[in-house]
Structures are given as structure tokens and as C-alpha cells.
Image (cartoon, rainbow, N blue to C red; front, top):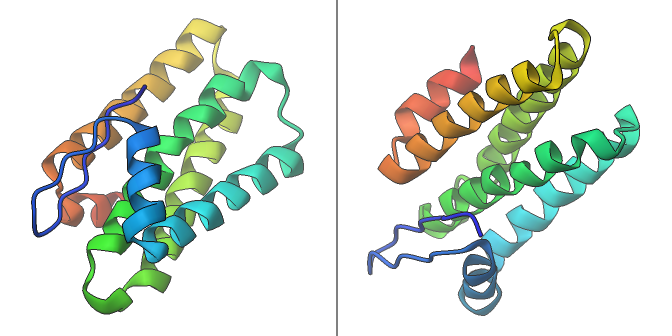
Length: 142
């Protein structure tokens, strides 16, 4: 299970994707809605680009991104930023998919591809752990 952190007024920490989804289901229809929309978006991208079995681990790793943006939307006051949260989540997912497609064409081997993708997700993990939204927004602008 991937570690995910949800910061709210109570500094609640959820240690797995499953725990986080259960929390959203019980306490945050906004977070669950964002997660479902981003999940549908990822499914659409998989169909659009006809990803094969070799991409499954990469696509599954996008769940961290979906949960990050769901938690971000959940944390915003009164849902004011929900539309922006979904939009920025989609932008980041598009960038990840584009990076994967570019790597598929230019990387010398699967190891090189996976190293680049791993670095990308280590960055996401750091941003999630520190809750540094300002840096996340800068990445989305680039």
C-alpha cells in the first residue's frame, strides 16, 4: 500500500489508499467525488492511448496523484477550490501520461523509463508529505 497523508483540522493521518478512500466515503463527499472524477479521467487516457500491460504499474501509480488532489479538495474551505483542484489534478495526470509516452519512444530500455517515472513520483511523494502546494502549482505551470 502506498502511504498517503491527509492533513485537516485534526491532523488526521491515513496510512493507505484504502483508509483514505474509506475516510472520504464517510466524511467527505467532495474528496470522494474528486477521486472518482480523476479515476475516470485516467481510465479515459488508458483507452485513448491504448496502453498495454507494460503500462499498468505506471497507471496504477497515478492513484497517489488522484488521492493527493482529492485530499487537497477536501481540505479547501467550503469547496471553493474544487473545480481548480480537479483541473490541476487532470493537468498533472496529463503531464505524467505525456512523459510516459515520450519515454516509450525515446528511452533506451524499460529500466531507463521506469527510473524517470520513479523520479517523477518521488517528487509527488515529497510534495504530498510536506503539503507544499505552492511548489505543486509551480510544477503544474511549467
